[in-house]
Image (cartoon, rainbow, N blue to C red; front, side, top):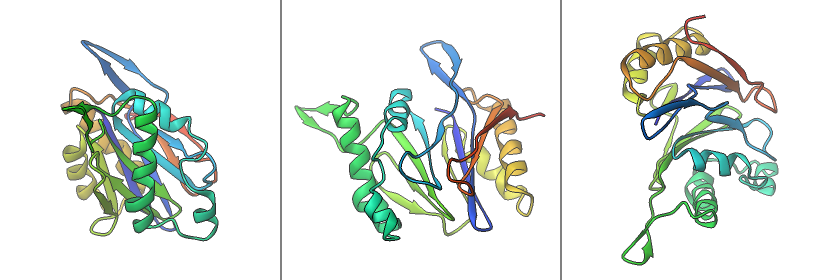
Length: 200
């Protein structure tokens, strides 16, 4: 399941994650669980849950509507009404939506963080959306509660330091989190990814 963290820092969002995925009884590392959204400069997405869901979203060239982006309409309403529906349709296309009693259920096996410029939204597997308004951060994944506690303890410190510390603590206490940290930012158009050990 893992952990993905997004923190607002000035006029941009810093996003970080660990790299562990689990298959049955084995652990593997993936390059990242966060990625620069194609055709959406300054846009990042983090995904926890189904590893295949992460892969198919990362490959999408039109996940975010270019016209809406150019018109400055990437906001809470967009995430609620358009982005989740796009994610759901991609999951449906790639057979990642379950059926119950012959009908597709409105629940995906992933949660998402979507950041654009200085804004960020948590999109739950049911389509419920939370805006980044109460705290300066959002978290998803099995390490989310532990990460939240560490992030609150370190308010005022640089975002990268807070993320690295949160993932380090998560890796010590959570079965599905490792201490390899990937960091990206909406400050640049392509996210400029870095990978390092949380203890470095």
